[in-house]
Each structure stands twice: as C-alpha cells, then as structure tokens.
Length: 265
Image 1 (cartoon, rainbow, N blue to C red):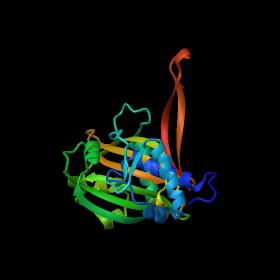
Image 2 (cartoon, one colour):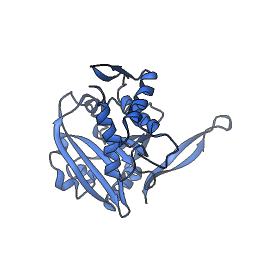
Image 3 (tube, one colour):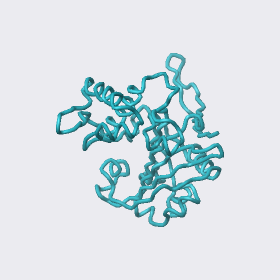
Image 4 (cartoon, rainbow, N blue to C red):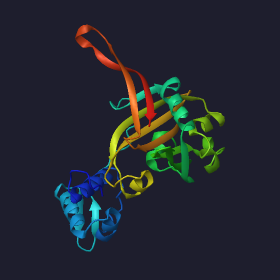
C-alpha cells in the first residue's frame, strides 16, 4: 500500500475495490478475504473494515457460505459524441503527436490475443457480438521507467497483418496505416483511476496510487471505428496540454480547444 497517502490502509483498499466494482470487475463475486489480504498486503482486519464500508454503502452483499457479491449495476460504455468529457482531435494534432511519442519511447508487449469481441468491445467498435478482435497489452517506457499500460482492441480483419513482433517495434497507428487503414479522427475521454496490485507492479508504483485513465476510440476516414484503447498513465511522467480560445458573443462566450497534445517526461 502507499505509505505516504494521508488515508488509512482500510480506506485505500475500500477505494480501489469500489472503483473496480463500478467497472464491473466482480460480476462473478469478490475474492475471499485471504486473497484480498495477499493482493493488498494488509491484515485481515483491514480487509474486513473495507468490506464493511462497501456493504454499508449498499455496494456489496456478504452472505455466510455464499461469499461476497456485487450489487453495483454497471452502465454501458460511454463512447458517443454527446458526452461532455469527449475531446476530438485531427490526425495533424493528437494522433500525430501519439505516433511521435511512440517513436521516442520503448515498449514491452505483455500479451497479444485473438478472441471473440466481448459485448462492451463489440459495442464500441460497432461489431457483431463475438466477431474476432485482436487484444494487445503493452507497457510503454521512457528512460526514467514505465510510463503507461495500454490495452488495445482492433478488429481481426484489420489486425491480421501484425502481431507481437510488430507491436514491439512500431506504434500501432503506423501498423494500422501500413495495413491499408486511413486514420481519421479520435474520440477520447480522460478520467482518473486507482492502481490495483497488477497495475502497481507494471508501472512501478504503490497500490492505490492515482493514474490518468484514457479511453480513446479511433475512426478511419469513413468514420468507422478501427481501434479502442484503454490507457493508464503515471501522472508524474505524462500530461495533456490544451490551448483554449474564447468564442461567441460577449454575453455567451465559451472556451473551445484548438489543439491537444500529449507530453511525457
């Protein structure tokens, strides 16, 4: 656990579990107390206090002999253009910047799988349920160490020309274009997430540390989704910069973004 966070250990465990519940991670039930003790490296009393708080808030149900189950109803993926968190960017802006970043960092490919699209992925990529997709997981590094953990989903008909070897050598946007795809625009949401035990190990941080969470849906020039990306970034090594301008009449001026760039250090 993060010893410098001004929060009790049980509350750090509670925060991570609450976030995972809302993500739908425990649809089949939560791990047992012993597994949670090992995952978070804490005592049983700490785990029990965290679970008690989740139960008090109506997020879980604890029944003797039947384990602990989630009571959270998860909503579908928020990928429509109407969401207020969405930022759109042209290839000459954010996407071009991302390719440049990929060329200036190194990457470790953790896994590459060919599998039927889960429902949420199929919805985002506008595919029939069960159509084949490529799921790739990678950790990107700067000279200071791990920068981000990236999971990408690409329709198999597009991704059939590249695999683990190619993903370790080139940014995926370059591989898509080499496969004949004409990359158009990106739709993106940025939020925050707490590192679980697995992510903490990948990114060399403490469990419960805050991360930048980026969901990015990329379209081709025909406005068809071609890639869905889930990225978790260390905020001490990664940032977004945006230029804003005021537009509209004097009594109804609003801020609009002109450029969006991703920077790492």
